[in-house]
Structure formats: structure tokens, C-alpha cells
Length: 405
Image 1 (spheres, helix red, strand yellow):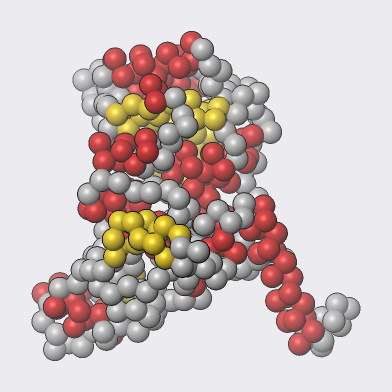
Image 2 (image 1 turned 30 degrees about the vertical axis):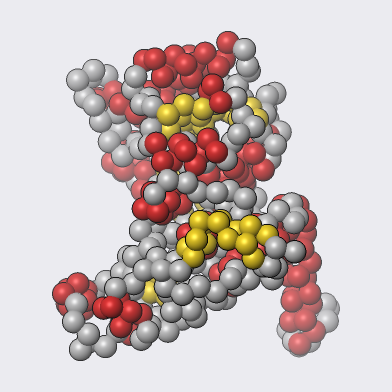
């Protein structure tokens, strides 16, 4: 039976890039490109050294490296398909970010790459939602600075109700809105959080709904407690908007998602000052979670920080690890093979927005992506498979495990 598959489009390669790519093996990078291939950037990289992910090709049996906003570019990271002579497709990038196949990306192709690369992986957001759900009276949330909807998708996986969302970028918002048609469209807003009319519209959600969580992936890099007190200092503007909405809506929890560098900014003072700002309006800040996406089912190495505040003084434990490369009793992280192997083969510059295919899932992760199974069945299958692998290993090493073999 034919199925529809969306966004499975491979970007193009220039003649020079094609010449480079054919020399790069799985797991290889810029070091594998012959020096006689002319490239000023490669000359600079060879002189100064460069990340081993530059001009890289993915490996089937490991998670991907971080999917960036330019995963259509050869030199940006490890974005070459493990065996096909092309860059990964838009859908493959989405798979590696853990977006299910029925989550369709809209807008220009350039925007689609950015939407996917900037997103919080839904399975990572799901893990954060799971830590909160037993402490909530209301499983409802508002998504500020929502992007294409990675956080919302993760919270919806835990059956949270989306009450409203705000995103300034029109292409991102188009994707968000079209993937959340069941939500109240009056409160899915495209606009600038600095505008009072937008903020008041978001705040009005609390007039008829009890809000459990407000979540936002907002920039805190310029945060300054001194600047916070100075109305002329614009570095904190988006943080101020987020703060004001939290202050007036009074959700049970708020969640801020950010890069790991926020933990060490100004020797840790940024986190302390953020805690102080929210403490003044009655919120308690938990110790930030520094999470690795591959530990929660995302087939990608990605690090993110989640800052959680609560009205009640509740200690929220970090999400428990689900996958691990080092814990013998947990399943191994999902690999590139498990994530994208079953998708139809493509040539460079090939693919269409919507295609019909007789595609069949080749792993439990792919079944999760195609909505053939839910998360619990996916994880149960992963654990079962891990037990089989572990038992086989134990049986093959009786001298190491005499009591288990």
C-alpha cells in the first residue's frame, strides 16, 4: 500500500563539492579530501586545524552529530549520507531530530533547514515534560518563541494540551500552525513578543484556562542583572518579555531551554541572577538540567540546558536516562541506520515535497516515526532487543560473568 512521505528532498552539490564528497568515506571528513582539489577554505582548515565534523560523512551505526541550521552544506558538519553520494534530505534531518513523519515542514527550503536545525528535538522535550507531569494540577502549556514546534511536539507526546504559542518568523509559524490544527487558532500567534498587544493576547489565555507550564527557548546570552534594572539596556528584552508573561499568567512551572554555555557565562553568575529575578515574583529555581539528546531516544549528539522554575518549592529530578553507551542495562543510543535506513534512495538534488512510496519501516525507531507504534512500545522493544544483545554477550564470556552465564 502506497504511503505519502513529505520533505524527502536532497540538496544539490556543486561540481567542486561532488569532487570532494566522493573521496569522503563513512566516518571521514576534510582530512580525506585530496590536497590537489582546489579549495581556499580547505587550505585554511589544513593550516589552522578544524573540527573533525567539517566535510564529514555520517556513520550508519552511531548517532549523528548535531543537526545545524545549515545541514544542506557540505563543509558545515557531517551531513553526507552514510553511503549515497548526496547530503541528507530534509526529512532525514527531521528524523535525526526525532520529528515524526507526519510533522510536515513548510516555507522555503532554506527556512526548512533552519526550522529543523534550530528546533528542540521532540523526544528531548518529551523527557522534560515527563519530569513535570506528576507535579502538575493542569497538563496545559504555552509555547513562547516556539519555532517550528519541537517543544510542543514533545509535550503533546505526553498528552499536554497546547493553549497558545508565539513565533515571530513567518515560515516557522506556518509550519507550527499547520501541524497544530487541533489547537485554538486564535491563540497561535505570529508576531513580536515586545509588542504589548501580542503580550496581552498571550496573557489573556489565563482568563479562561489554568496554565500548567510556560516554555520558551529564548536567548539569555546577554542577560545582565544590572541591565535588567536599566530600562535603556536592550540586551535583556526577550527575557523581559518572557518574565513579564510568566509574572502575569502565573503558570505552575516555567521552562527555559538554552545552550550549555549559559551554565558558565560570567562564571555562573547568569544562572544565579536569573534565579534571583524569578525569586522576586515567588518562583523557585531548580538546578538546571544539562541533557544529552541521545540519552532520550534522539539519534543525534546534541547538548541542551533546561532551566525549570516552580511556584511551589518542588524539587524536580532530571529525566532518567533511557539510552546509554556505558550503562550495560540500558539500550544503546539510536543510530543513523535505525533512523533513516528505510527511507527511499535519492540522488543529489532529487526529491519532492510530497511523494508516494511503498516504504516499510526497518527498525522500531522508524515505526515510531511513522506512527505505527507509540513511544512506550518503541522503548519496550528497544529494551527487549538490548536484553537479547546483553544475554548473548554474557553467554559468550562465561569467565567474566560466571554467575550470569
